[in-house]
Image (cartoon, rainbow, N blue to C red; front, side, top):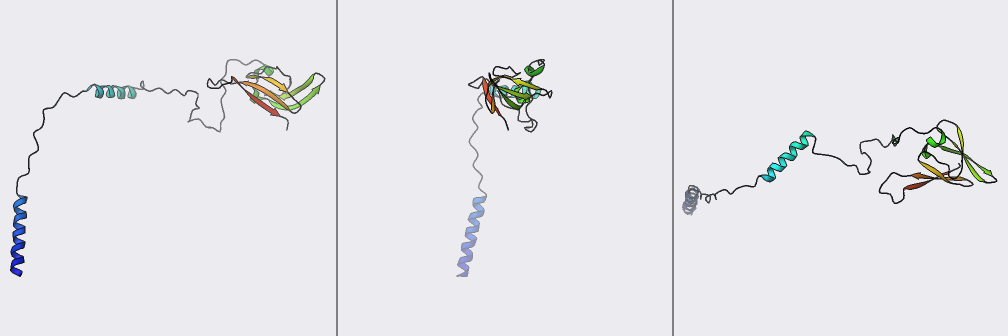
Length: 163
């Protein structure tokens, strides 16, 4: 029994060695190369060269804020030239409502400007970036011009109330 197992084992080993020595099949013959379209490759390389030169990329913010500017510093106002003196040269965000006075003609608002002077405002008073829409018993409504081309209204209303 042992002899049969030994013969069978040597036979299997011999067949394995014989099969291992058979030559591999050669790959099919290569087809002749066809002409390769290099225009796409050349266009990509030209684009990379232009990008490396700095002339190929531009960024259009399209009304979005700069993501690299700090939100804590606040907005910087675009100056449209020299501001007029007095109340006409102050923006709505720069003045502070200090009081409202009742007169026979109606209510008048009292504001403090950036120059620490007090001014009286009535409906129709013009400021640097807007105007006074109305003065009521405890609030003043301003109409501020908006420079956003996507906005439906060219203005926004800012309401200041007495504290």
